[in-house]
Image 1 (tube, rainbow, N blue to C red):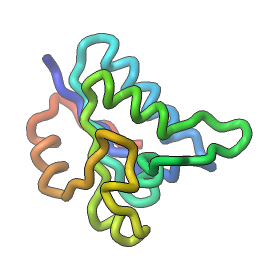
Image 2: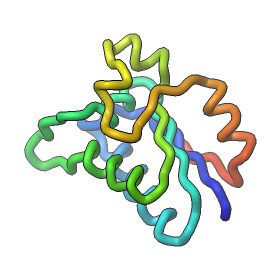
Image 3: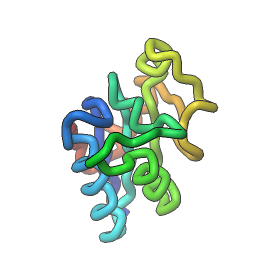
Image 4: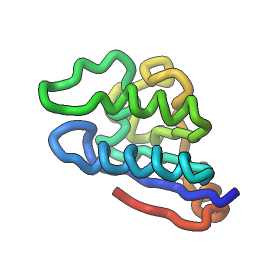
Length: 116
């Protein structure tokens, strides 16, 4: 099975990049592609549990949970989480805090790396 790693760097709300990244991840899983998602910078907020979504936006935390339930691996940058006061227990179930070494391994093992 091919593996694609997605790096998301945009905040969860205010732009549609995170939403589009997760929609692509859903479509990739549907065609039997293994998906890794690495959240950097403000994108770590996508993995925050208990989000109250602004009117007119999709619930990215729930989308992330659906991806995890379908086999996607989700890592939120440790440095970025620490800077924002997030701990692993603050993240949606199945998302974990990871480091650049995780991203390096994913990059090496992936057929493609896509950034948002």
